[in-house]
Amino acid sequence: MPDLRWLAFCGLIMPACVQAQTYIPESAETVLATLPDTDPSLTDDIRRLQQAVAEQPDSVELPVRLAEHHIALYRQTDDPRYNGYAQAAIAPWREDVDAPTRVLLIRAHLNQQRHAFALARADLQLALERDPRNAQAWLALSVVERVSGRLANAHKACAALLTLTETLVSGTCLADIASLAGKAPEAFATLDRLLQAESVDSADHLRRWALTIQGEVAWRLGEPELALQAFEGGLALAEANEQFDGYLLSAWADFMLEQGRAQAVDRRLEPYDQSDALLLRRAIAAKRINHPNAGAMADTLRRRFAASQRRGDDVHLREQARFALDIDNKPSEALWLAQRNWAMQKEPADVLLVLRAALAFNPAAADPVVAFVSETGLQDVRVQTLLERLGDTDAAA
Image (cartoon, rainbow, N blue to C red; front, side, top):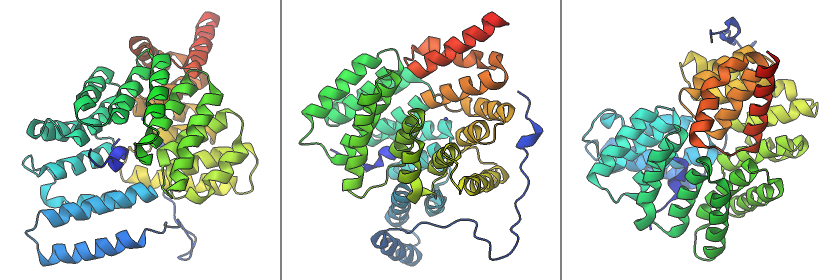
């Protein structure tokens, strides 16, 4: 059984208001961001590896290990700078099709993180041509295909894991895809059986992943108590092991915001303002509860998004669209951003975002998303509610 801590491998006319103005601090003492602390042992390892790489410039193993350490730090902190350091570490193989398989997997992770899904897919397929039994590559490929809305391909990648990994991994992967393709009740039941059967032997990070998926499925099925139970179970495992899980925290926060529990979101996410995704959720919660720092949180996000735009970075399109919709109340901008995001990402969160923005500004813009929901058979009570509202809009037109 391979080490699966890499599960993190596993979102109109442009309105003028999107053109962000350059932010210029009033003084050199202005604090733009507070950088997170890092794990001391990993930092020491990185220093030693950097020295070793300098002393052995022809080594293949050392820069690969250095990149993997940087990616580990990224997963601990959600700080994207570490992905940049990882990219620099493997620079000699930036576009090399003959790069070592471990480099291909690192490149796939980095490309997936910046939403270059076609490049990530190509590297993973190349890795699998070399080693068809590489479980890490199959699972990473399933994530890329899932995010891209290519559910049949994602199912095939998950099925390949049946003989390569423990049952909880392959079963959770398959259940996740089934839940997006018209079989959500069956997927929830499968996850329930898997979690009970694997309660003793499976590693906590695998159970946390399965609980996260189960929580999302229960939420889409309109079972809030079951969703909360799963999310809290996953968070308890993360906290017991002192592990950061940004995806799970984001899912939990979105669920709690929908349940009207903004105060709980503000409290739990307070330590994680270095993460754009988590700060966005906290800023939404802060606005709802009239938090005294709500404006400051929003301003921080505006600066970060502006910096992302200056870099030509599309990573935060989902977050930017939601910010425009839920904080700035700019539905036209939100729709434009949501549509750009939809061109790359087709997860349930992206479906919801386009539908909400379209309802707020131009219902006809939802047509491609409505077609996708019909084609995939996505079962989601939230999506269904929005589709009914769209139907009412069409009837009134």
